[in-house]
Image 1 (cartoon, rainbow, N blue to C red):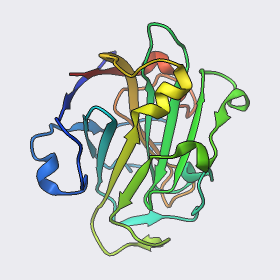
Image 2: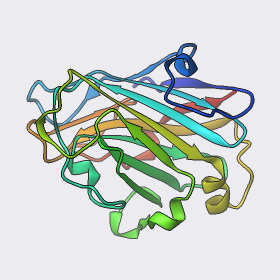
Image 3: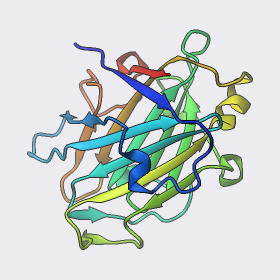
Image 4: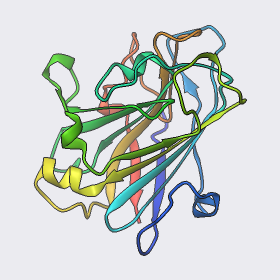
Length: 218
């Protein structure tokens, strides 16, 4: 199985509006296009763009979905059951087995946990006050089940590096990290599970860091 790699370019200064199209014009996409476990023909090809600055990591997901499900509207709720995209990251794989799972439904509602692969009950899930500095901006503005008025939706995410620094107790100066990007919807019209890097598991499970790809911060 090919282990994919993506280079995260660095922009100087800080970004006042991370949703502006011109901010992303020079950022090459990676693709969530490997769909596993379900064989219902539902496999939207999601493109993801990533860059970073001294203080933040920025993500942009472009998701070709006309019909979506958004039921969960509170931080820490089961957003993976909605139309959802995810970013799993271990920023220091040379010294830690822990990775952070950041999950966002199409409204931008977040679920963030940390732990190792294995028993999900051993993961720690962060409270909203512990996620200070995270920001999400979605093209979808309210809960919906069905058509949302467009052929696609876009989610922008701003992630503070200090979040990882506080958790791991070291400065985020990592060059080589490991990560995966996922698309799912456990309780949507067509249940689906897609990843950037393929996950070899007999049942749906993104929490297997041995199948993460390389995310290289330039």
